[in-house]
Image 1 (cartoon, helix red, strand yellow):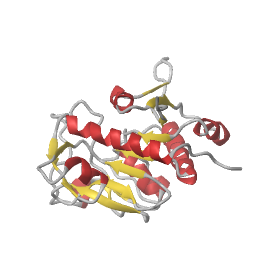
Image 2 (image 1 turned 90 degrees about the vertical axis):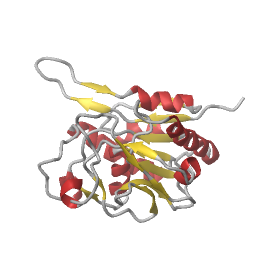
Image 3 (image 1 turned 180 degrees about the vertical axis):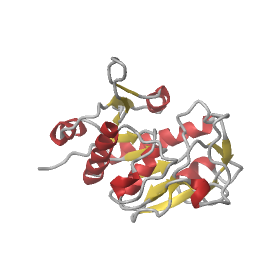
Image 4 (image 1 turned 120 degrees about the vertical axis):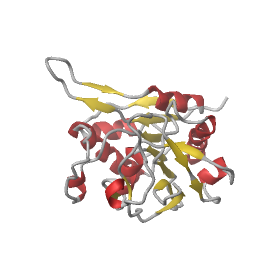
Length: 247
């Protein structure tokens, strides 16, 4: 029987308030989707030690960067925007360290939502901070009154998302106000919304499987077809085999 790959996930983090404990948490859709695709999910706490994180990454075969609140633009040399709702600093510090070490090791990785945005900026790309301001003619990409807000998806056929969705009509969920602006070197755009906003990127590097989606295939508002993204990711992790850092 084939051994199931171990795939690590980062978590969200909430500081203590009014005497309550701080805690890490993660939506069940992420680890349930990985388990359904044939992997064993491993949840990572937001560690501060590079050595400790390195020890954990020695044990896993791939990494899923989950979605969440906004990255701090100051960390990438940009001014703060009033629409930005920052993720906790402890989470962002850990996530950036994790993304950097995943890149160094060429561990197979998938980023979702802000996880894709992090993957892009860690590799040298950048973000637009507020779609309605940066792209005034863009369609709505979030609706506070509708958590299942959806829009169309235009896919590049010779890509992973193209293989999944084919050339039929595709609709995906949408719940973001930031988006990728310039794509990092070594990546290409493989899906956009009809207004051109980037919805998926994939690595063009032969030695690194990396994919990101702006939409959320793990969400309860996702379609059954979206689960295939996790299946493709887990299959790619199996093909890559164990990735171990040589001292």
